[in-house]
Image 1 (cartoon, rainbow, N blue to C red):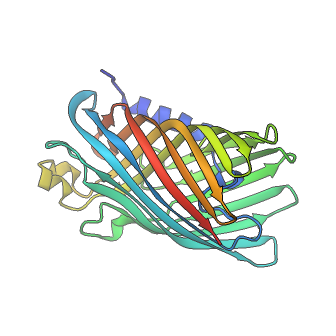
Image 2: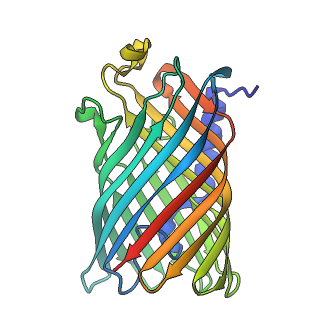
Length: 304
């Protein structure tokens, strides 16, 4: 049986989040990012995490699985200057199936508007700041505490044509365990076909056998902080959880593939193992830790 202390949980999360830079803009073909000539991007898909046993503060209690549905639209606005803008709605919702007696909501997710400013500071320096104001909730009895604005700032330096370095700072006041996360990372194009991407939240080793296909092995980190309804705990017999905040996270390891169809369409599939799946109620010192389980994910990207 695995035992976790509160300090251990926070330390492990900080080390993981700080090692890999939250900088998806450095990786080609990543959802929500546009390159030269692109004006809009649509991205949608979903994932499934197999049901597994849970531990509550180190004691076995019940089980739960997870479904995740996500969709986003991003419009890029070029100004003809070193500064460009991106804007668009984002939807990302988890659905859970907890067994009786487990104090986990049936769903938690976000509906937000991404606001991005990109500044080409110099030939090799680039700054990107993304704010995501919106609702982060279980979508029951919405109130002002359901609203939040996470902010991500990324500074990159293009060392040469093959190597890009960067540093990032993520701020999320609702994530009480880790409200402030800093990190560094890189993307190294080792050869025409091979690339090493140490970029949060998807560090991986990639190979492109031809222009249409891209294969990878690596990981993915998904997380969010959500406000629960004012009677969430009372309905389940745990009133201390009323109006509390829950941090949910998944740490995945697996393999995947992306196929590009024509100039506009990309199809992605990946599968592997959930190394960690956790529901954390930090204010009341409660953590549900899911044991390892299989997962699968499908996604479609359209650029125009």
